[in-house]
Image 1 (spheres, helix red, strand yellow):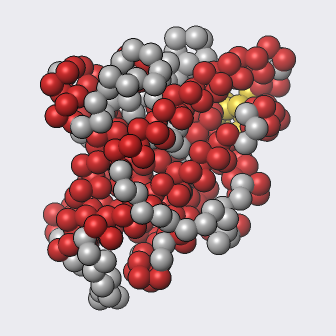
Image 2 (cartoon, rainbow, N blue to C red):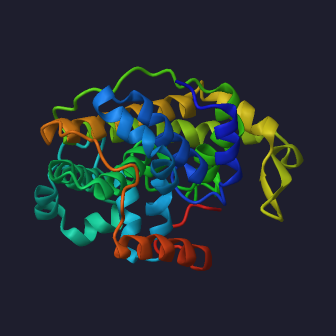
Length: 324
């Protein structure tokens, strides 16, 4: 099932800024689409709360403006661990800490291990039939799984800062999908599947991201030689401000040169998220997801949601920033 043009328009209007991996708009759209890959035993509950799952897909990015330790959960610099395919990098957290030390891991990103932790937490929430926790953890797990599919989240040159290509991060993950996803991307993907080896699944997605990173960087550099600066960038109004960003013609040419890479990674993110949700549910024994029409969140949850919205708007990102 495709996301309607109306829904995509609404999601675009509430995209406040280019914020982190995939941008607010795309994270919301990815979680939204993932719901439609679920089996009937999950679909009713998830579809009933699809707006929550979509809106709160960006909570981890908002938390980056509040919690210093949040940033490393979104990426991993694989090039800091030897050569592809990085066979010496342990899949288990304890094994990685023993080999490299926690400080090194935190400095270069922990997304593959954090996904495993979030998946375990979601499985526990299903087992306990804690509907509020299921929604919160599903929304946030979706964010981290999607982040693992972003090429520049698997490389230390994450924003082109090493090659004079600052801004390429938001260009790939935000500008391209915001301009093209609603009218060109295809979301007919199939159904979620059971992931028998979650750690291996995540590792494979991150290796794919790493291999794609050089293509992203090289393609932008080659295209920049062909476009004069006054054709590469344009000025547009966004949220009451005029901002400089990549021109539509340059963005379309970039997407074409990448042969649909952004769409493929977005589709794979949707499939991966739905499959992680489905796997957690199966591992918990396929509990019935019949719940009250309104899921009740605790006062602490509600306070957390409110603080996230207030503080991220006024704070500076803690940790690496990919917005410029």
